[in-house]
Length: 631
Image (cartoon, rainbow, N blue to C red; front, side, top):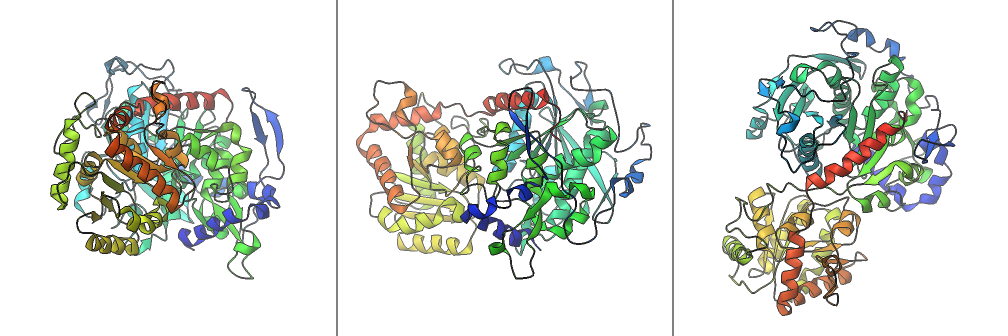
């Protein structure tokens, strides 16, 4: 059964948290829960995993599941898959090369990026990483954070699939070199062979997993016909390959070794912590490694029928870590036992620490409304759950140097801002009215982004003297609505169906207000981009939006800048609440120019850089290594 079908059942769990409580122990996958104290004084869980209870034959033991395939010596005389090398937690100060590219010394790092005293070998595992692959914020994070950590003296590898879809986008992998290292992995009832390509760029080892399942038209998760039916297989391969890469790839002349920190992102990489605990540590490999799960969007969990556990190549006694049982009311029919495996749940019960992409979201996922059925489990691990707000790439998003916008500007000279608005009005065919407040929206056209709210409010918004421009794609019904609205309000509304990077920059620079009425938003990046460009955000008070946007207080004059605010937030998620916030913003823009200028400058000077986020990640990594492996 496809993940999308099973996931719909997970979403139902949010409406009846009381039913979950009766099966709390079973959902956790533990026979017993015993509290004990770790070195930091935090409560941890000691547990034993239940036996295999899924349908179908139990998997073979680890010893019989293809480990013989790993017993051959590789070209360096090491056992493939169990390549034990001297601990490499510290980075050599000698010059090394990686695919012929000179690796900079730690001393070559820019002076303002202070090196940490302890250097770690960090392995990102992700389904996407910009600029090679990107569908949303996950790609942005895994394309920028590794560079920021490498600049601080860490050795960083990013492992993601090599998506080849026979389009001009394939040239993004043109700099990657075939390492000629083939690894055999046992899963889904047979031996699968994967290869590795490598590019050393901006201090980071970008490693791409090559397999026929990643070579097809479409995006990383599906095509025009829907979600790929074999995504569980594809991302199981990614997790296995990521566990092998630090052991077998001699990048820069030597491997990362088995003292690594795995940063696994979302459900696609969530099998990694379970693999470390179930298949490697019993053989003495990765006994000093740690894993951190980063949740970007808990609505996607990698849920599949229980019988698919047999395909994962895991020992039968580890079934409890992935076991997921739906309550009776959520089952499809009378004979449905409600048994499933949940990749994200497996990482939650085995990872050493858990992170989300904002502090607000780390709390929301522990509630019945925001946890999508995993809230009780996450609440049980609150002691190791943290939130770190994403950063933005200041080189790409800088109004003083942006190549996509018509005019440049900065906090010292804001005159280019209104010129960008005029240029945008001309390009979109709107009346050129620099004094008219322009509202923008950039995002996917689906329920999460609050499109229904905008649809209901457009008639009332259009009664004001404003212009409104939207950029996005998604639900065909919303796309058709955008086209119809443009026809109805020719002088006030423009809808751009699709996504275009230059246009997104032009809208961010040219608009005065950015509207983000998201139903939920783990972090959100568009509001950060907007503030960087002096565009004032009006957002629903949820997740990362709550953390990053402070409501403007016109009566706080004379206090510190933090108290004055950077935009407007609204709650609850209703049309009326959103319209009140929008009217406050429009009135301030028209009647209180000095206050509006202050809002612009405060937003433009906020520090949401990846350097700031990287220092917080370092702290969590340090905490992860303070205690023994959790599993």
